[in-house]
Image (cartoon, rainbow, N blue to C red; front, side, top):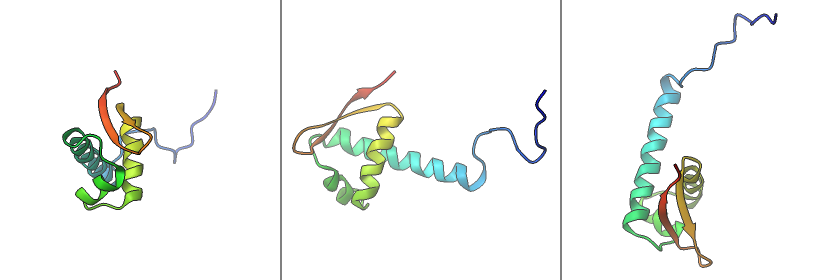
Length: 87
């Protein structure tokens, strides 16, 4: 049988600063999602200005929203809309 190394901890929920960072990130994602739902058909830069964030952060957050199951649509002109949650 394979022996476990004593210094390797089993995977657990993030603790300390990592848990706090994830909570902060979730609140940023929720804030962006609410802005998209309230203001459909706007571009990423518009949301960045609205939320006082840089464009790169908003683009990253859009990907994170999709990773967590929010369904976003972007048209050819870059306008973003929310159209549901993946179950």
